[in-house]
Length: 331
Length: 307
Image 1 (cartoon, chains in turn red, purple):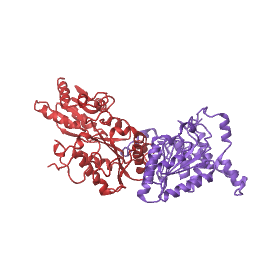
Image 2: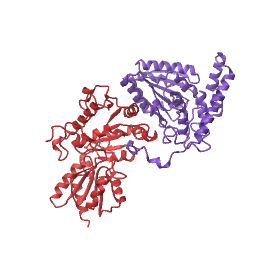
Image 3: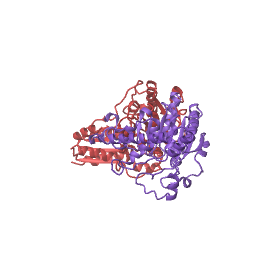
Image 4: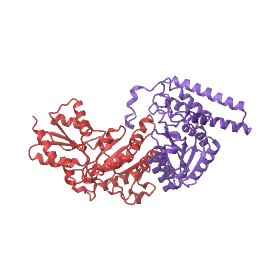
């Protein structure tokens, strides 16, 4: 039975367990201490572990991320919170020039066990507060990129991210953070104890045989709802929750497409040069030539402010259904 | 100072031979500043440096041969050839460098915070040039160090030129040190050609940091004798200026001070210089016989698990 908590509490619970078992874990960011994070994902940490391990910082993202680099060299495991993923623009230098590259540039001698915890996803907040950007991080070598879709995964993937000796960008979805566990149709049972979910292992959240949908984060539940509704019409859809963009579980997608012969990628990130093209290319490169292939992502426009405009550009249950129906016509 | 000068001179040999690709930045003319740090550094201290980093690395104790091998793109380099001369890492002495101007200061802030957590009396030193002080990262890190009273020392090598733009044209203040109070820090400007003056200022800053009194800026005035990088046409500085300033050689100044105070004879000092020069020549010759990295290794080290 689902415990009475929301997804952000699952993340906070995971961080509690990590900070308890490993004293080198620190949490650093804006409003993470006293307030417990603007979405509550670091609630209770400062009270329990003190203000030296859970640090409320000024609005200084370059300092936060750079600090993480120095602390990692000193043997710590900093969890750096960038409140909204959109804010990465003010500190991308430390992220992609230092955090992502120091291990490589040092010939493997320096490790960067850093988590960049940040909130993405479209929730009607406009162009500077509603992006996903996992494709951006994934393009830069040296970063692992995780985006959970449900409470169970959110807790287990955070434990794995903190435990990882590589830097991990952990992108929460703002539309899921405050959703109650019991309102998720999958991954709603969250054990109280610690557990991990390996990075780079996708999950089949709805099995099927006619068409494969690869997706992650906030759009997984939409795709599951579509799969359930279309099952009643005799269309069997396999929905794969990728869980992470780097590493990408392409084997799981390929094996599914080998069976279904149709591949749709649903992505809340921008369309071009992104996750959807990458998945499709890798599947084709692996020697599979599906009879139907489609990308359904945010067309290459900034996220608009008004909800009526935002709905127009986001994948929705009805738009996903439309694309699936078109693909099913391919013989 | 002799070691840092002759180390840079050895590096220069790799440019025309194309043993060193990319742009090599030497600090010839700025030797007194690195030398001045040595006496105040402790084993647990950390240092974050710049694209012009060799002298700082030598000051904190990075192995010269491994660094020379890295710069000459050898497998035996301190980063196995994966870093290159702008990206020297040596965790054993907590040294790192970045090729991004200003980016080392927030990293040093992290080391300074670690010193607070470990309560080990360590200090973190960010060495930067005068160009870096106008970046946002510099301001953010200084402010946080001041707000948290962290043991951060920013040693600014003010060589008056950020590539082609003079400091006078890019700073709202006449000096960098005078900005320090706005971050709750102590600031001092010293003659960077005078090793004793820099050493004294640096020692005051480290003592202050170790005593929990917060960050400092030590601004050491100097002049880079060569272009921004090897191959820089350096047309932005007049011939007269360059000649006049190069005549103020910190090594000659230090040598004359030692002689005039009767601390060493000219013969002894000349023989020291010859000996260092010979040692560097031998080291370079030995490094040149080292293997280059194996091309098959180019995809290693992206992730820890991909070793």
